[in-house]
Image (cartoon, rainbow, N blue to C red):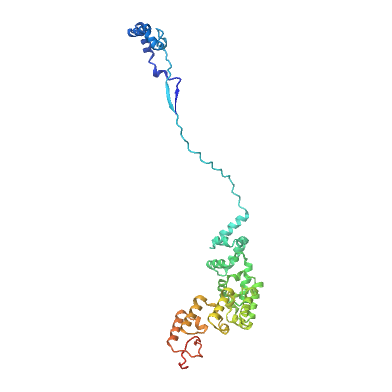
Length: 377
């Protein structure tokens, strides 16, 4: 829609001629009126027909003098203004103001925690793993205790790499004090009869010894192992950190449960002390079931060779037993498991290329089909 607006005034010097020219023109018009103008006015005033046909016209000039021409007049003109509607973009959403939160001043606890982290990082420890998995240990340990433990370990010739491995295997060492670790070294040297040159190897193999109480764990376990006939405990120091009630005795009882006498069970652990470290559910039970059900052998062989439980069931025991069954052979447990793969393969070739074994030989397999006319040697 367009609208017409009337302007009230225009600048006079744009439409009005100069005053000099207006005054001269007015003088000429007053003194010498145009003849044509006079004839036109006379004709209009005398012509009645025209007056009746057209409405009465107002004369343009009613005065003979034109005083108004000497000053500027105001003329009214119409100006066309078009109103257009412009759509403005929507106002952006008001961003909420974030209140200013002043940074709290560091507390003594925060400063000490940061110092612990800087120190642990300086000695090469994985502080992120310690925080994520052992936060309580890190928080409970004081910086002074950590430094005392690290200083003592380095004074006994433990390298930074060895210290990192010890902490990764036993993070509780961080919360220990040097005064708690020194008695462990003394016990290993004086009571367990570990050579001074072997103490580093003993600790590196079983770092948990450092966090065990001499009175409540190490010494009772040492006495128990000696009581069942394990004389050289210094060769099996990894067992000293085991609980007698929770680990050692339950394994002896398990062997009694599956058919061994207590004397034979203790004899097996005396021959092979590493048997105490094997899980009943994941190791002893499945391997014993395969030995009895699939291999069809007796308990006497296990009593004489308890190292059977140290070999992998899927990678060593089953494959070699199947090879022997396919060839009609039956090896004793040491010959079946102790040899390397190459030695075991050559042993199979020798047995298969030779004549049949005697029935009294341990290589004889009762499942082998033998013709009745073959003479026994």
